[in-house]
Image 1 (tube, helix red, strand yellow):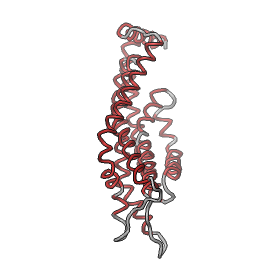
Image 2 (cartoon, helix red, strand yellow):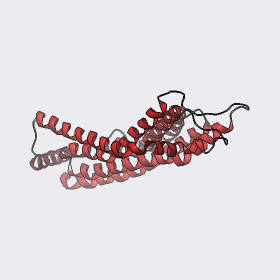
Image 3 (cartoon, helix red, strand yellow):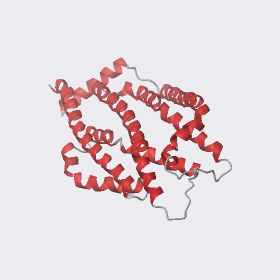
Image 4 (cartoon, one colour):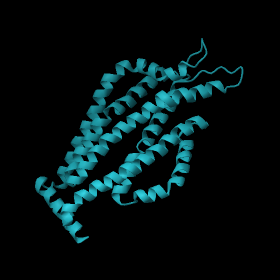
Length: 264
């Protein structure tokens, strides 16, 4: 224990030698500059995306429009919806597209205070979290939406004409994107819990039955009240949890190997 503490102290001292401590004002200025760069990235993405907002909305609404009967289409119940719905979509996509830059700026701000082995683990985790979020959104669009909208359009009572509102539809799909994007971050959350010492891979494996039930409960809360979408969210969460345990074991070994020289 003392050897590890001494190693941690020497690691901090080496970091301090490489990265001199900055006063609080300089830290705040650095944080402000990073935030400004994040905002600038979102603004640039918005400027590039907004001219195509209407076309992007048509692409986003294709999963439900393709299921509507011939002659039926989406409607706007609010007079401002034809303007604000594509605008909201463009803003969301701007943040979505700027996520790598946003996370890179956050990484650049916190990286100087990390140990060498923490840096080796943190950057891959950061990169993987971006990819997983995008995969979650893609899974929602290409797999979940066709099944969910097919279910909703098929169970309607006879004589009821389905005319989806463009604003309601946008709110629904953005919620689904967010839910699946966050759900696909489970491996990252699992690895971070293991590395922080809050739990161990063995403890998580022992709690597997509770986790499975929790996945279905979360799927019930985050998705519409149908079994299809709940299952399509719960099953990937469970699989990703298992992957988190697997990679958590590998990360623990990586940290142990990094600590070996300092424990001698």
